Picture 1 (cartoon, rainbow, N blue to C red):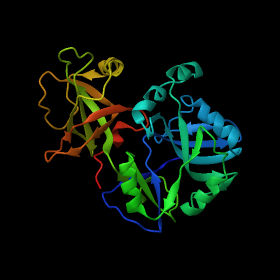
Picture 2: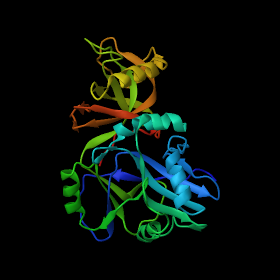
Picture 3: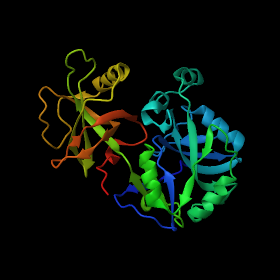
Picture 4: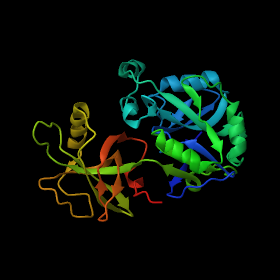
Length: 311
């Protein structure tokens, strides 16, 4: 069986309420499609890479609490207090092997929000509302498996409550939508915070007592050109500064990968192979990030897929 392909939401600034739409909490984690075809459970990232080695307890839970054959969609998360946190999940993303995973002390959960097939019945062409009904009975939902809650209608009110609670935002989904892989306007992102992926194209030297590097130089693709979006100097601890500097050292190159001129004296350039998750407050008029903050590296998205998210 080939890796299942994910349906992706489109960012929008529009907020609305409609009984024809379902609204779910937007989780700050790693997207994961799960599948089982009579044997072991496989977990796939949104760029179709196997990740069950990093989350064996989730694969085991799906196997023991689900059917022999299924394909489901969900989000793997870790918590920082009451909030899901991509940064808190970082120690688990790049690890495999039970001993190393247990050593991180990071507890993870799998929030399941869609059912693509079940016991040989293909469901991608079944309306979402019915898929949700079937999902409720497809697994025994006890930790670390959790059913992603949703509500019908009241989108604007729910969005205000989500932001007040410090959530990432909401995902709005057309209730009769089919599951169609790729970016779709049948699923929409209502964000409370601004963040997205950026490609690392360089870094600056550390100053003062700082070690590793000073700031990342990041950008996004516009066609085949890597456009510069600014430098990111906060969000790192000492361990991240050291490990990320080591990874970038192996990628150093003489020429800037950016199509734009970067006015950073003595900048170090790297091949655009690393993807970072960056939070920020807004875009400036000249296309730079305001108050950017590093939250982690992503390995579930190819650099050439990283574009500027617009509504």
